Length: 350
Ligand code: UDP
Image (cartoon, rainbow, N blue to C red):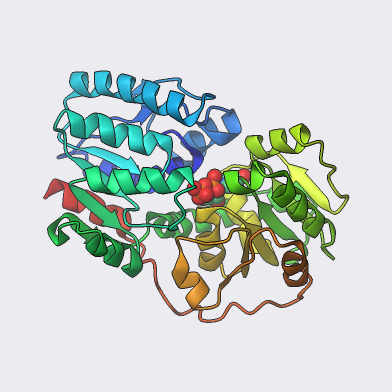
């Protein structure tokens, strides 16, 4: 693992491993893809993720540089550790490097969050997902559509286990804890349901001046404050493009997961291009406006909990000005029963 969403997924799966510590042991490799304290160590500390046994310290390069350097170093670790399985999460360069390193030396790969597709091959994540799925021997899918997609791509049914979404497990487990411990509402002087929570970090938005400035303008026109824990890449791009931040936007440094959950639960609307945050909006019962042209999590569009608006400033503005967006069907449970992590560990033991 190496990136923020992977730490959150790993938190619940590692806990399930620890419950089976009599018969299974886990050694974590941290590639170093995300290295700032508030993008990495905060999650290990507050979510109780075991300390990585191997820290590769690789980050800051291009996709090719990072993936290549990770591949080489992960292979060395695997030859030394000789694991029975290599488990990879999601769709980052670390995911692909881990899967490739393992499969080439005949160590079977298990992929958590298999089968997701945006059908947009310009996204670096899409390539990582497809290649990782096709290199894996066990594919743990979160949704019906992910399972169906693997069938379409000719992957043997016997390798596919639909377990639900580990991020739903995390939302349930840490949701309670956030309510009991987070002080972020007081620290930022926020009123419940009195603000919009925003996150923006996808390359298609951050690397395109027109899209990024359209999003900033739309946030600037919001009738209530927009609280935006900003990703380091996005902060850099705003400076590189010389864009001005409207007054309405309240930029904060990235927050830990418990504070993030607290902000999500209290937001009136969530505006995001994050994969994880789209689902978390639903888990915490908050309407979501997605700043992308397509999504892997189509079930939320189908049930009307999420709206895809791309970087269209007038559409974003119109939605953010709506005082009560409907959440539609909150009884649907498209992401499993909250036990995905245990099911993954059980399948690996078997
Ligand atoms: N997140 C967080 N702090 C923040 C922003 C996001 O803890 O300041 C969490 C968020 O709640 C979700 C995960 O990070 O669980 C999503 O990561 P990200 O948006 O970076 O990646 P994606 O889900 O798009 O792959």
